[in-house]
Length: 328
Image (cartoon, rainbow, N blue to C red):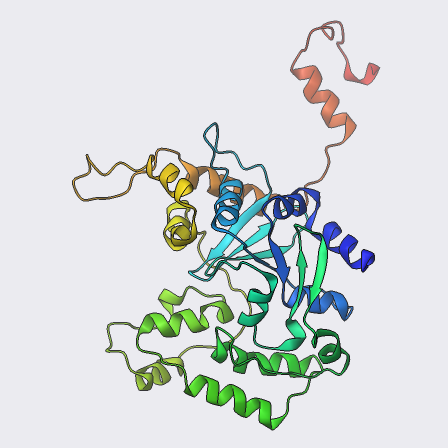
């Protein structure tokens, strides 16, 4: 069932990335599935994790961490990372893929419980290669209705997403707007961390840069500071996330074995200040990989003439007699 939609996912992600998510038993869910079933362009892929081993394995393959070498097997480049997710770009297929790592889900139903609207409660389970759809998914999309889920993890984000979906032709009743409002009112925000966690995924900017946390926390202070921020839900350019920075953001959901493996590359005994030192120059390698991607986005195939010239100049055995390339 839905064979055409399955094929499209594989074509967009590419075989290597698709197989990686299948091997790690990940789940694709949310807006990508909605776009797929409503014949809209997919903006990005939100990938959810079903175990700590899944996150550990994906992180190891993105950064190429292994006992033998650290060259990445997959062409995903980490562009942005928060405590909530890591945004990667597939340098060949040009797809944006978000690895949602703030929570490990033991089932697709658990993922749906964290979502805000029924019309985004669609998923593709890579392990079984089957779609899982909420009972109201098709109805909500066919009628273009927004039905709110008060158990969602981020209700403020939901309120701001309403305008986005209205622009796409969805409608929402006043009762549903009130449900969002009272859900927000019932949630406690006691620190800057609580607020940053709520809105970091929406703006795509480093949450550490959003607020002046030297000010004592209060919701009144949050309101005052938000007045100085230009709000949008588009990704913006940020500095390349470092390997160690990503480890610090995600290690609470890494498997114990993977954390133990990473620990062997730390050496704080000689620094005297507990500064972490990494034996592998992953950040240097990763930046080189990023520079290559930025400098050569077309990845044009070399012409046969260029290949022959380089081959002849290398003087491989058997070509010593060729004096003039034109003779070929």
